[in-house]
Image (cartoon, rainbow, N blue to C red):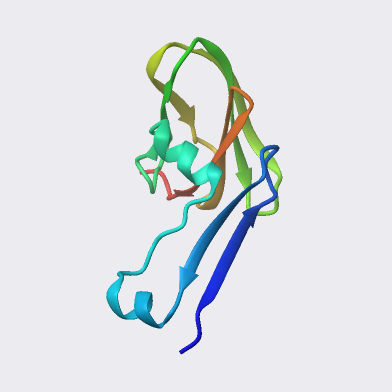
Length: 131
């Protein structure tokens, strides 16, 4: 078996970063598969970005950790990229929780976007029929 080097480059952010993963006969037999996280995914994990409940009905909570007070923007997009909801708020130092009203949003899959400190976080959100 030949050795291969896999280079993965993230060109979607201002600070392009490349991950390198070497795959070969020796490593394939001895190592578990590796998960390669690009900078946006790492940042989302580092700041605790999460949306719950997911799936949601009438509202969803957006949670994240901030290292400073800063303005944030939360948007909900349909899968065609059309913005459906937009709100802005001031995040405080530490854990932040923001509620997004989903009343009137049709059941389906959406993308929730959080912009904070020049960084953009995205997560898929499923909205179910309200009760």
